[in-house]
Length: 256
Image (tube, rainbow, N blue to C red):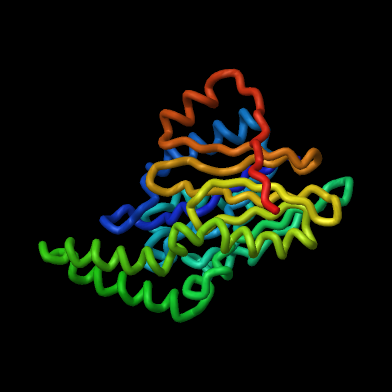
C-alpha cells in the first residue's frame, strides 16, 4: 500500500490571518495529481488541517466547502493536531501493520511540547486571535498582529535549536515499539534512521502544506520505503509530477 502523509495546512476562511496560502481548486488539483502519479491508496492528514484557534469549524465550512467535501473521501484519514484538537471527525493517531509485521505509527506530535499539548496553550492562542479579529480594522492593529504572532510562534514551535532533538527523542521512545514513526507539527521536513535490537527504525517528519507550499512523505508500507516531497509552490510540484516519475527513496540521516 502507498500512503501519502501531509500535515499542518492550517486552513481558515481566507481572511488576513489565514496561512494556508492555497486556492482550494488548485490544492485539490495538486493533490489529485500526486495521488494519481504516485498511485496513492490512502492519504493521511496528520493534524492541524484546520485552524480552529482562529476560526470556528462552521466559519471554515462556509468558505472552504470544497476542501471540506474533498476530505470526506473515504481514502482520507484525519488525525488531530493541536490547532484542530476539537475536531470530532479526527482520531488521535494511526497504526499501520504490513504483511511482514512491520509497524508504522503516525501522530501529529504536539504532545511533545507542553504548551501545544496542553489546554492552556490552546486557550491562550484562541483568546489572542479572537481579540485581533475584532480590532484588525484599525491601522495600528497590523503592528499589534505581528507582535502577537511572535508570541504565538513561541507557543507553536519549540525554538529551532531544540526542534530536531526534542522530537527525535520522543520518536526514539516510540521506535522501541514501532518500526517507523511519522509526525508533523514542527513544519520541518526531516528523516532519520536508527537501530534498536539490530532492527532498522525510521523517524520521519512530514513538514507542512501551509504558505502555498506542498510538503509531505510517500510511504510504501510493504517495502517500508520513504519518499519526501518538498515543493515551494504549485508550479514546482507540477514541474516534477507532470514528467515521468521515478521514485527516489530518501537518504535518512543516522541517529545514535
